[in-house]
Amino acid sequence: MLDERKLKESKTNVERLVRERAIVKEGTGNFVEFFLDNARNSVDSASLLYNASTDKELKESAGFPGFNGYLWVINASYYSMFYTARALLESEGLKIKTEQSVHKVVFDALVYYFYMNGKIEKSMIEEFQEAGEEASEVLGKEKAKELVESYLYEKGKRGRFTYEMGEIAMKNKARTSLDRAKKFNEEIRKMIEFGDDSAAGDEEERGEGYSSV
Image (cartoon, rainbow, N blue to C red):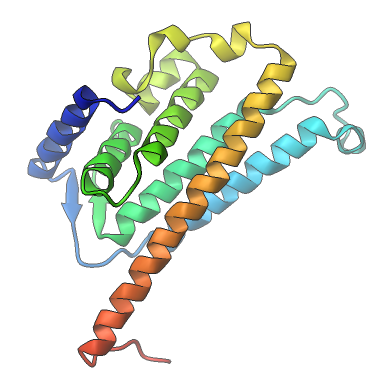
């Protein structure tokens, strides 16, 4: 849950990272499409894994009659959201210049630059946060430390997916994760496209429209 403590932590972290030049704002976002392509590939992978896990004929025709990829549906769904968030930051010229805890940096930047000024609803941030927590559980305790720091990952949830949930519950969670990712990605893409349209309009008003070539 996104509470005041976490908001303050995100604000403090981003302001420190800006001072350290780990987050910088540049004039153009050259990698928007790169991140959007990664996001698209990730959600496609999640969809394929889900279909392969639920379609008996597909599993048998592929030669894996016992295939179950629900854990990785959750993981790929989160990554699609992560890459879409990167694309949004990139569209604003916001560059992440560190590879250490990059998932946490992206979360903090999303909160600071888009939630705290009202550009993104709280529910979207919390869905992104929850997706990160679930992906952390999928990849295990050690990998979770790399993905998201402790305030993004509630220790009480550890083991919930891999040890306590049955196949039906896991299937439902995978479906929820995939649907959540699709919705998140769609909304963020709309924001990026709207921002691009606004920028193009500003250029045209100044007599500096894009060339048709």
